[in-house]
Length: 136
Image (tube, rainbow, N blue to C red; front, side, top):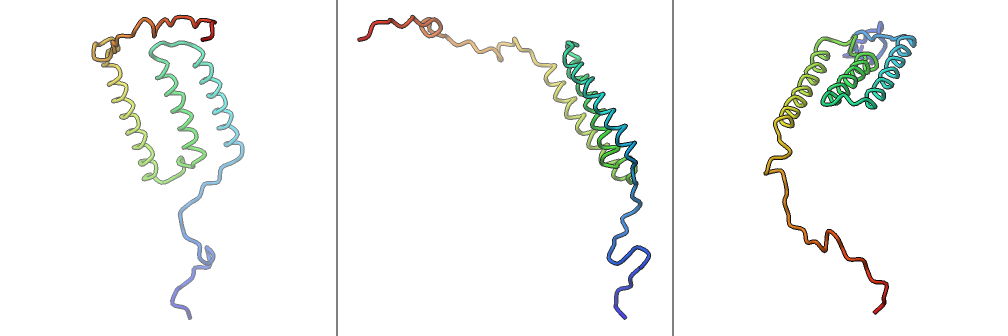
């Protein structure tokens, strides 16, 4: 007899990796329709000027689309709790990155003397004389 015992319930050499969720094609189709609708909403929102809220609206729509992909196509909805925590913490750190970046951008002044370059430009360089048609 061999030193390794085999469990024939799961076949030879298979790893017991936990429960696998089988998704229906209707569920994938519904997610596809939702993603297409959100893409149309993204294009529509890009055509309207919301002022300073443009970036926020685009990021919200993109976050919803990314969440749909992660939950359903990557099967995180049916995954273990630790994997859900890892995905959520990655979004937390990404949002912190955006918050600190946008806070830095909001506190800058474009017209501050440090950001304005004042270099003397010769008049001939800015307004060159037309070339004469005579050949030398």
